[in-house]
Image 1 (tube, rainbow over the protein chains, first blue to last red):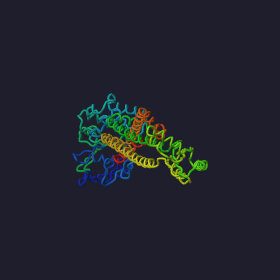
Image 2: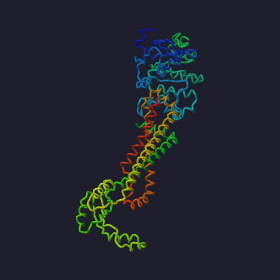
Image 3: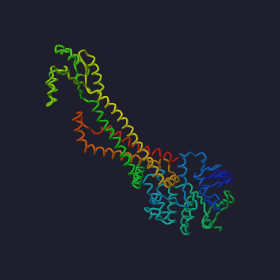
Image 4: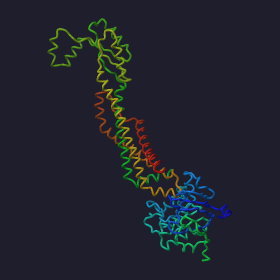
Amino acid sequence: MNLDMGKNAIIRLFNVTKHYGEKPALHNVSMDILPGEFVLVSGPSGAGKSTLLKVLYLAETVTDGQILIDGMNLSRISSTRLPYLRRRFGMVFQDFKLIPTRTVFDNVALALEVAGKKSGFIKKKVMHVLRITGMEKKAHVLPPTLSGGEQQRVAVARAVAGDPDIILADEPTGSLDQESARRVLEILLAYHKKGVTILVASHHLRQLEAMVTGRSIVLEKGRLTSATRLDPYTL
Amino acid sequence: MTRYIQKALADIRSNRFLNLITMVTIALSILTVSLFFLFFENLGRVLDGGDRTGRAMVYLAPEFSETMRPEVESAVQDMAGVVRVTFVSKDQALARLKNEMAGSTQFLDTLKENPLPHALEIQIQTRDGFEQMAAAVEQIESLEMVESVEYGEKWLARFLHLFHLFRMTGYALGGLFLLIAFFITASTVRLVFYTRQSEVEIMRLVGATDRFIKMPFYITGVIQGGVGGILGLLILYIAYLLMGSGVSRIMGDLFDVNVRFLSFTAMGGMLGASTFLGWFGCYLSLRQLLK
């Protein structure tokens, strides 16, 4: 790990280990991620990709090691401060995690309501991100009536609505067709260009590698086995 | 806060049946407890006496003669709480008896001598309760020339004992009903929470604080308790209007007292209790669920 790079890193992992019972999901993972960097996390099933993302937003706690998010040590964060940490992230999941009884508008607005934003601001902001994701005409429908691609675009809209510093996407295109996957990735890349740090755990290597300038890391059995630069122009 | 209230109302609308059950349960509990209060408040006013007085008969000793009358009357009149003293001579007493037993007085006509004693009919102040009457009677009994005093004390003592027992039972039953309402409210919150568990999980993932998650539930609990309380009191008031006049007539004939509905303080207390109940059920349930 490059210590000089670490001084400016927005995410730092120091020998992070996570066990589920006897089984190690992550083993001694150390890495630094710079602000505005795009990191593709790949590896076979069970490699620890999702676990890596989960320990970053504290859906899981590490068994050993330390994680710093913008200098904040996650092991020292209290339960009352946790919501404020999570607002710095925008999260996209393979199963979308939309509230089926709330409209598209309300699902996206949730990210702003929890932050205490005023109604007028919420309305403007939500419609803005829905326009970016191409979902403004579906603002008042319920998620179950949408296709998988549309639901994921709503999830991305919710993830970016709060202007997060970091977007974590766990298999964002896992259950989508190629065209829908491409649209979702384009939205993520647009935000990457604005300077948002993005981590994507995905199997869809080829599609992403062809679109992204960033870094690719490979996990195998919980261990970081390789890290390479991604540059679509050299492919 | 507006947002929380809107969310709470939306939650109530989306779980109408469940919330209705809870409100009706609270309403029935408040109705039962208020009914007990209404009964005891009014019966308490009967026993307290209000401005009323109690009657007693002071039977004078056989050696009493009419020359002693001013002294004895004065001694009794001076007793604390005695409002009025009326002398009933043995002849007047016999005449009253013949009047009351009209049609069956043949045996009285055969009497050679009037067996009835002279008596004083007294009225004693009972503003501080019938215990005040008992105290006054005890003092009068100690006077010379007083043979005995009768005022239905055995019946009254038994009644008071039963009343206190009934009141304790009423309070216990009322408390039980409130406890039942509390548990039902807590169970409703749990049920609603379980149906919304995935929603709560998503809210946490996007950075919702515990307060953001809990507040709509608390407000729902307050609304359930408040509406339940109002409903219970309303049902009681309608029952009071429908049946109150009949009961008032009986109470008026027996005890010279009007049946009144619960005071504003009592109603406020009931409403406060039901609202608190609704909120507290939520609070305890969520404390455990959101650990």
